[in-house]
Length: 126
Image 1 (cartoon, rainbow, N blue to C red):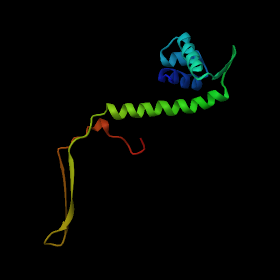
Image 2 (image 1 turned 90 degrees about the vertical axis):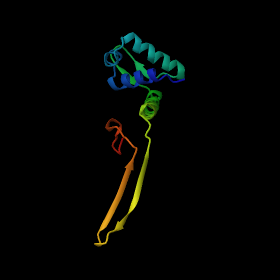
Image 3 (image 1 turned 180 degrees about the vertical axis):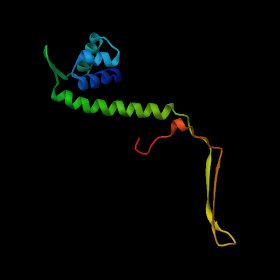
């Protein structure tokens, strides 16, 4: 099982190239960051980082895991967002335009019983 906390720690370590810097960003001690990475490596049965005293680099398996971790974390954030937002209720009624006696188009648009909080508006690219 891929723990999302371990995945988040992994992505942060990969971005910062440092267990210590990742710990600062995540509000964790360096030992906790090391434990998360150790457990993630044990769960997948592969080494994800090559470590020595002065450098940290992703292995080929680490590069592959980084792609998966980002996708998994993004999907989890999307699901959380979808299910934590209020459910929309109501009906939208659209009536086709009609021509008035003067020959002008009149459009009737009626919205009834719908409230969409501005905080839930998202751009189409989101």
